[in-house]
Length: 459
Image 1 (cartoon, one colour):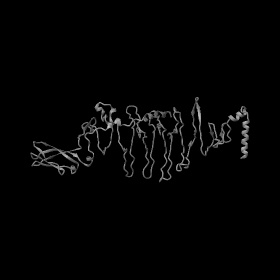
Image 2 (cartoon, rainbow, N blue to C red):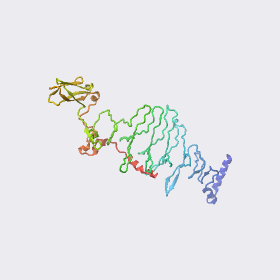
Image 3 (cartoon, one colour):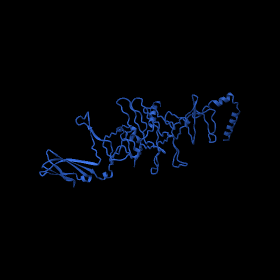
């Protein structure tokens, strides 16, 4: 070791005493040293230092390394380039390979202040920009070309070795920068052969051998101090162009597949109020556990006499009460008496009965001889063997009806005064509608996506 250090000292002394203007010196300082082997280092005169923390190794770029490179401990790499006279930040590290992975990284074992947390395989931070410039991307990835294009980024969360205490690691964690930076922005690849564009973002929950599979996606709107909260998920279907084509659906939801006697869950489940600003088409049955409030209603069917070309509609029968209507016919006997038998649940469901009797086919008088009691009532006619059409109405008094009586008249709440359920009926603009006032405010995110939609062709 003493001999090596002495040789280095002699070399350093000889270099400092050499005339810097001599050809020998220029050649030694400006020409790269020839590598002694395939794994040698090609460098110029800026190679200096011994690689310690007090004397770091400074290397000029480009750095050409042959063979394999092994680094133990921390390393820092930075680079810059000049383009057309303006200084721009270049790649700190750039790697490519003919086969295999260009970069393969494994995080370190847990230790330090967070004993149970291991190091990240790769951690990147985008370059800072000036107040008038954009900051650099933390990660920018483009899948490779091929018969099927390669994935830009593929991430797998780490396995949990103790499933009773911990869960597996997240595949990707992304946070937008301060002042409304987007956490994740993804665009499907363009299709140049006229079939179908790529998926912008695909997520699948993890499988489980026990309790429950992982959620495909969990989305929560951001909080605002003193303002409106952000929308949890803002979705807009793609545009369409040309006759006969249709725009893409904003969202398509299907329940999972049930196997081995399992029950199929709902395609969608909402735990709060739902606003539908537009027409709602339901291809199956509708069940409502609460009350239904509407401006009007009808049935609409294919016209029985011309089903291919016409519809037939009838309006609902409305009442200020929770009224039920029952009707039928009966014929009195030789003494002009008849008894109408009602269902055994009739009085349990109804109260406050009203009656109508109409004589059919003859002139006679008809009357309700005995009102409803024991789920039946009696009628009598002035002549024998008279056919009678009868109608009875009742007001519901079951448990649900007693708890949820419909308010016939009510004042609008303060937030809805001056607004209308149907502003067009009063020659008012749509901005005066209650739905427009309660609708979520646009965030502008869709405009951002539209602006970037054409960028795929430039990538």
